[in-house]
Length: 385
Image (tube, rainbow, N blue to C red; front, side):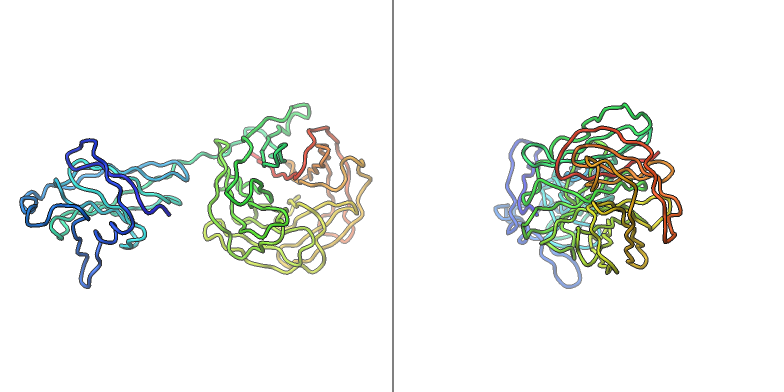
């Protein structure tokens, strides 16, 4: 969290001050029975600002405020000259989550807006609160829309950075198109995997990973602008495994790593991962639904795997002959109607139909095989209209 920022002077001029955490702590003093606000460090003594007590002008604030995802909220307004303007979250007065400015024409930025929220703007004159405004902060939405069934593919560029591509599934000859630039990373890694497309929020979610590195796993969201950003650390995910299987089901991101003894339900709001035990060994590097909700399919060199999310049961099946350059799908997605899309490191996309999905002897039929772009660290999901 940023502990300092710049604010404009009360006379609306170009004088700017740097307010540190210490200044905020001095300016905002919580006492029993209310909030008493002292003058900021360097301000004139209250005795020299007595005129302000008779100028209790109305506090006005631009409302609502719109902000892009991950960006600070810009607040502007007008208040009593030399009054103290305090902005905090509406859920409580917390100096660790507070910004202060001077009155008159004022402007400041409030960071870390995670979603639609409300901020409290308060004005204080000589320690007395003289105005309060609740400001609605609306986070702009940039949905990932698809007019046609679309495969969303990821692979690493020459520098190892994850980049997303899209492919129109309604036209077999349609070429891939870049959807994002190579991801610059989050300070720990420049790779993410275990993608899933959420049809409710129209966003793509994934997990930031690093091979063989013990670092926090973060939840990444990619919006319709092709911008990927971290929502924060996912609590409960192992830090020493590469999370590579992912899909959205029932409003959550379900993930695991190849060969792990458990899989996880990641809450997209709280960022907590709830573990569930496998009964069997998951040996595939991605999974996706076919026709039945809550039943996931994977593919490896030995054939197909089926997972029941409700029980954790893993079943293994020998599938049809898959071309050697398409075997062992690094990424999987779902076609309209429930067919499976297998994406290999060669870029080959194999469409497979699954029949008798819940039986002990399901059948698999190769529908088509389409050439694609080769790559490493593959992953896939799909956006269906």
